[in-house]
Amino acid sequence: MIINALSSYYDSLAENGEIADPGWSMEKVSFGAAIGEKGELKGIISRKHIDEKGKESLSIECVPEHGKRSSGILPNFLVDSSAYILGIDPKADSEKKIRRARECFETAGQLHHSILDETDSDASKRILDFFDKWIPEQGENSEMIKDHLIDFGKTGFIELTDEKGIPFYEYPEIRKAWMSYKEKSSSDESRIICFDTGREDVPETVHPSIKGIRGAQSSGAALVSFNASAFESYGKDKQQGLNAPISRIGAFKYTTVLNKLISGGKNITYFGSKTNLAVIYWAENAKHAYEDIFAESLEGSDDEMTNAELSQIYMNLSHGGTFKWKGKLYEFSNRFYVLGISPNNARLSIRFFQQNEFGEMLRCMALHEKRLEIIEPYNEKKKLPLWKILQETVRADSKMEVSPQLEEQMLKSILTGTMYPFELYTSVMSRIRTEKKLGYSGWERAAIIKAFFLRNYSSKQWTKEVATVSLNNGTDNESYVLGRLFAVLEQLQKRAAGTELNVTIKDRYFASAATTPGIVFPQLLRLAGNHEKKLDGGMKVYYEKLIGELMGKLNDKSFPMHLSLTEQGTFYLGYYHQTQDMYKKKEDKFETEE
Image (cartoon, rainbow, N blue to C red):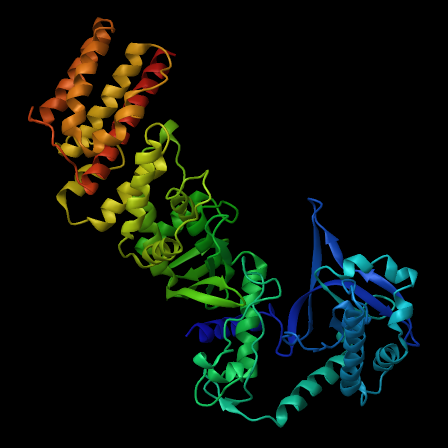
């Protein structure tokens, strides 16, 4: 299913001319080796670029397809490392490694002869003359090589070019010779029924590597591979990909398009700097606006569109099946895919795979954002993207990482509209109890609690009363009112002190008041009586009245000895709403006086 979806995306990109054809691949090229008319090396040409910020980057070129190398010697056509192109390995620190570099060059020469011997052209003659005449030992001492020797050992390949810097693989006769070689090499091989296409074709024994996944090997990792008898079947031992037979063209398609999605940077995201879970997404018809909108909804960035544009798209979603963006019409019925991958040594693990109509995914994401809406400090209207939600489950100053299971479950629940994982709630509650961050700051945690209640307890009457955007003065929910009462008592203490306090009742009693109010609140009310004596008449009456109203909602009954975990979350929401309400009234009063 995953490989089939990737192959279909490849076909869509190919129709738009956005991806390499079979037999070709996108590779990073750092240098060009210019070959003269007699096969001599004329110079080394840098393929590096410097962007506006002064950052150096390599050129990414569509070159003859590269084979997957492990420990053996396997040359590539026209574009390869310095060991294969020049017979020089800058990292060779022993005679054995130097000899190996020479063997790589000789093997590369044999490959080029097998491809170009029957091609009668000036370009092919130059290439073959170079491999026949070039002496690596002398090349190491030449000035043109010395200047770049250190860089040869870094990322990127060297390509063979003419004196003008035009790569030989762009010559029509060389391209024709390469494709003829590829077709001939597979004509005599055995065939299988491909899992992807369902047609009989030549199988790919070793699938190309997937590169660029954070935490995986820099040389790439495999999505499909078998290297132990425990994973093999039907006698296909030591035959790698034959245990999951995919044709050569099928393997090329899914690996090529996956590498493109990763390398482009726009179709992949990580939720935080510590996680290695890569989320890759794409639209079936390769219209990139779908991907931009999804990224905007998922990550909360404003690079591709404004919040107003995204809101308009959400509105169109609730009224019809299409929307316009940048003058083009898009359909919500278009298929959309989300793939989660994480590294596992030399392999990649599939964490999840979601597919649905784009409109349905966007609808679920819009509902998720709606649940998160809550009054924020300073009347700001910020988004709460998934990476930020996950960040609130761990201490920012610790080395702890977000739970991989939580990452996976949260994304699934957002995209499908299912319940949020209970681990989200317990982790946030733990952070509140430990750090006591919930009041003028910490709105993110209050928003998470509210969203959790609305989704997971949507059928409960109390949810509608406490999981509101701002303060609900009409509810008598006990734990919610207790949270409000604590916020008022905290504010009273600060007003009575008149200066910044080293320790407040929040620092000392916040966690215990939410869990065992019957023990804490009688003591807090006694302290409140002392604090009221320090206030002037009007302010004293204000707090006496407010505390009296809240005590009236509790029907003057005794405080509960214990609150459940759900009631503790309700307590925190009451505290947060009351704090924001008092702060807002303070702002309104200030503006009136001004």
